[in-house]
Amino acid sequence: DVKVTQSSRYLVKRTGEKVFLECVQDMDHENMFWYRQDPGLGLRLIYFSYDVKMKEKGDIPEGYSVSREKKERFSLILESASTNQTSMYLCASSLEGQLNEKLFFGSGTQLSVL
Amino acid sequence: LAKTTQPISMDSYEGQEVNITCSHNNIATNDYITWYQQFPSQGPRFIIQGYKTKVTNEVASLFIPADRKSSTLSLPRVSLSDTAVYYCLVGNNAGNMLTFGGGTRLMVKP
Image (cartoon, rainbow over all chains, first blue to last red; front, side, top):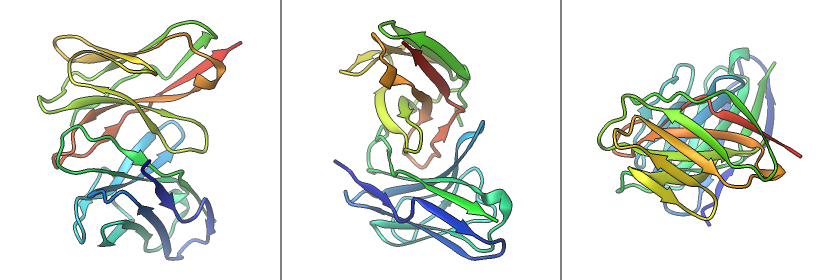
């Protein structure tokens, strides 16, 4: 089975801190995604990547950046955390090459910004 | 982007069949329809996917009419463990964003 691992289950940070959320997948997937999930808003796509060193903006990229230096690892960066970035963050991966590849999700990181 | 509309919540009882409908009026030719299930404190997991007509697996069935502007996830004989949020996702991996709708919160009662 594909495993998508997010480095932290819970994080508490202070306003203005730089925050790194790490995600690693073990199935050699080309595509990786970062979503945030908020009550009543479902999952919203922040950034995605189709290859090493490539990134594309999703629906809500403001306040975030990403890094993909290795194929298996996709990092989400909050340059200066704010309270409105308190949320559940979900990482996902999928294979490239087929139009209907399914997403595999990690268990999520619940980030609280105080 | 094909946006989706689902009911916010549904209630059912154990042993009943549950049908959740998703509307996606501007679905594109290359888009597939995929359903995910999410339990509390977990990431969503794949249930079923289809392009047209009917698809069935060991967990659910997916019905897609000819115009593909909607789809219905059918869960046969639900149990308490089927209580979850169900997301309908329309899109593909070909350089397009995969956008989730708000999901349907299914509550199965004893």
